[in-house]
Length: 345
Figure 1 (cartoon, helix red, strand yellow):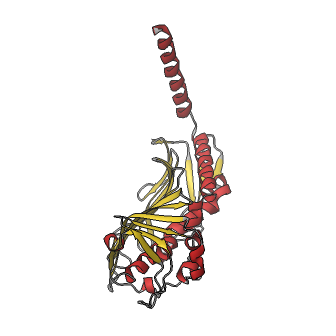
Figure 2 (cartoon, rainbow, N blue to C red):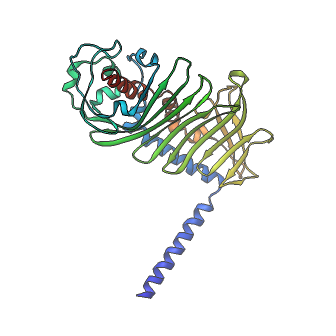
């Protein structure tokens, strides 16, 4: 018996060593091709998900006056509870939220809202409510464990939202948002959305003497794609200080003071490899907007990054756009929070 256990353990050790050796023996070209294939797979799965549909919500047909003109503070405890979509017939108390849309059915330390999916995926039906929609099934749910909205007349603001979303009792993703601004141009912001499969997309910006913008795609804790751009100035005066693009275990870096663009594989500088950043003379470039990377591998062959991720590049661009706009949080979550607040206080 001990001999069998010993033999089994030995086989597992050798197998693990061989797998590790295979991973470590990948060339730069093989690593890039493997990593971009994983990115394409991830984006295909994301594009087919309900979470992606949620993020793609637009402001078409919505009304924004009640939110854009809000200058006050709403904390989670002011609106916490379990609410079901059930339009009321009470006398209007607010110009922008003329009828009660949600009926509180239970107490909770969270904001839990149950509503028809039609209203979640098409905000105009929420903003211009048809009481006949109350006959629809409340099969879409929002569960917010954190909510804070503050805005004043001097454009100082801070915002936080942590929420899970489900459709027909199935998880479709979770959202985390945080922002704090001292003015329209000074502050920081971070938005990320995690899909049930473990994929997370993140977009953030930090201002100061140097502005740093990050866009990333990860699977659990593993980075699949990450772009970081640090710059000073604005508009045509923008001057890039540092650019780092990570594609799996490959890093492409351009830094002020270094003559060439460096390429790293697992943190090791690839002296025979090279890269060229193609911007099309656009000062506001990123891989989601007019920027491409021409890679030269150890064997002298070249490949454009845009070609490697071409099957899903448009999905990548749309995710960057959605995370920047975040219409869903504004026209659904915030609108619901304001509706509950104005009709209960």
